[in-house]
Image (cartoon, rainbow, N blue to C red; front, side, top):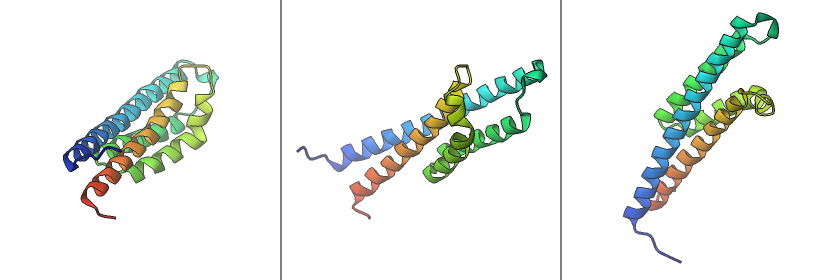
Length: 130
């Protein structure tokens, strides 16, 4: 088993933190873009159904995901993931359309939170704090 120096652990922790933040930012940005497309489709085809209010709420959650990733808040990202993926993202993940990407973007929130939590855990393990 290899022993890793505190410097190596710190570098990995910083890399995971950056990757987690970028993943959360990317997920929120993709979700905002796709929800914008969704609203555009509703305006162009009002008989097709869809709710602009739902889209607005999901865009707000995507903005919260971006802010949570930016400020390194994995707990908030988990809450945003549950609030966006469970009611809507899971359904859209199963649809054969462009909007499958919304469900995938919601899954990026979960990945981002996991990376940020792992980064924190490695940082604490390096310093020896519980």
